[in-house]
Amino acid sequence: MIEVKNVTKSFEGKTVLHDVSADFYTGKTNLIIGQSGSGKTVLMKSLVGLLRPEQGQILFDGRDILQMKPGEMKELRKEIGMLFQGSALFDSETVLGNVMFPLMMFTSMSYAEQRDRAMFCIERVNLGGSENKYPSELSGGMQKRAAIARAISLNPKYLFCDEPNSGLDPRTSILIDDLLSDITHEYGITTVINTHDMNSVLGIGENIIFLNKGHREWVGDMHKIFSATNQALNDFVFATDLFQEVKEYIVRNGHTAHGSARRNKDNYEI
Ligand SMILES: Nc1ncnc2c1ncn2[C@@H]1O[C@H](COP(=O)(O)OP(=O)(O)O)[C@@H](O)[C@H]1O
Ligand SMILES: [Mg+2]
Image 1: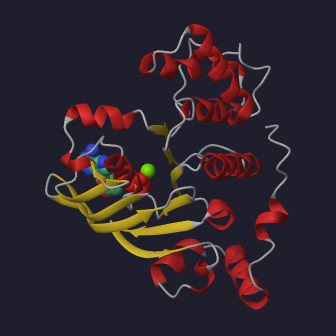
Image 2: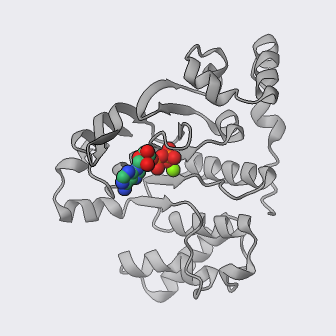
Image 3: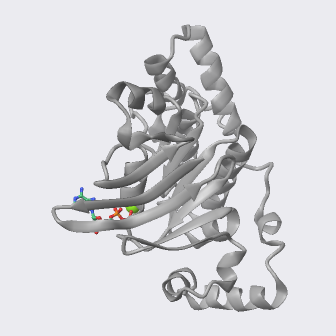
């Protein structure tokens, strides 16, 4: 579990995170949602130690990263997987080379062990057979899956994904969401996902933190979001006529079948 307590972050006198508190749970898909510019990326970068807030605590299973010495932070980093905007794969390396990279950097595994572990992750994201391809030979969804395989190669306790669906079509986005959700449950990872994609919110939002102009304004889940009274949240989530209609329908009929109706778990072919 990750606990964020009263975190404030400013840039040149402009505060972009105002006294933010949030809990991210183990084995759950925790979503940070909010409009562009609301502070999602700054919060996530603060969580992984790329930015340093002026105030507050960030506890990884009780360990405050803001109090850590560089050596301790380095150890914690080994427990963290990251999936940043775009897939950030190395163009000159194959899928296998990309997924083996963290294992080469951070473990004392033999080449054969690295290869076995990398192939396990590649197969887990359904990219078996594409391990010798280069990123330029892959579709956007496949690149994203390769990046996920790389992010889980070190068997992380914590996984951070900044807008994992950006640039993907809706169907591919759902498959990526389902993959992230399945991995989270299967391996008991504390997964934090930044998104402004409503399909993700309604599909995998087990714990949702809503940021509005750097303030944490609402916490809930995909079921509670339909009865939320926060105006900014409603304006954000149900911005389009379509989502407004979906909301009205669900308020009338209940929100039960959504997850299972959209899923085709056996098919990650994207
Ligand atoms: N390195 C930086 N220097 C100055 N301002 C920044 C920096 N990074 C982000 N900001 C500002 O912080 C605010 C939140 O940005 P960000 O976290 O990227 O939003 P989001 O990810 O929700 O779209 C924005 O106003 C942005 O301009
Ligand atoms: Mg962002």
